[in-house]
Length: 286
Image (cartoon, rainbow, N blue to C red; front, side, top):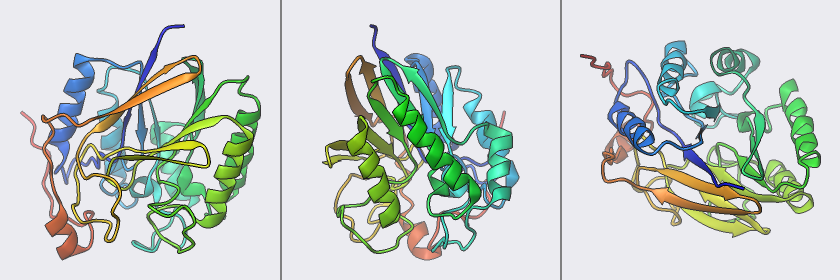
């Protein structure tokens, strides 16, 4: 069986009116054109602020359409809102925000079988949301695991299971709650989930927990050095992740091309406490 190549791009934070990171997206498009993968998976935060501005969602959709290769995407908190109680912005996910994603991008959770693997993407913003689609997605996910036909599983979600402590109990917008984490780990024990790949933290890192490899994808848009505060794992660099799948095996590498602009937003984060409410910087087109 031939090798199947996936590129995971995460947290590009695209916007027509706050186009701070568009240069890096143009670089990413060039890199994909030079060495096209079989599939691009975007693991959320496609937008600067799709929660409040539908045009950010629309613009991000047009940018994915420029890839020229097959792609799949799952939403992040900047796209459809965070899990309740949304500790940062107080605008948690709801049916309306999710519906806007579905209209633009299609399914927010999906699976495909490629390279001898089952590749699954979940709308992890539904975790702990209390919305009806949360239960539907869990049932669908468990069925997709039961019916994977012996294939190992590569799972894509937006947030990591934890930062540096797998037994963390504190509620945070940086990772999932204890119940969700335990449920995912338990499912991994009973099914062949080999890798859980995430974004959200704007750092790249790899570790292992309960026999599952955990991979953090860096942001393709920007970094925030010193953030999250107190986090000592992972490295702040702009880039993406490449996976090579064949029957029963998977390899990955972090692509940190020097052609990307670092875009360190540390000062902005310290001043505004957010990278969402930046002053306008409209996209300049020829």
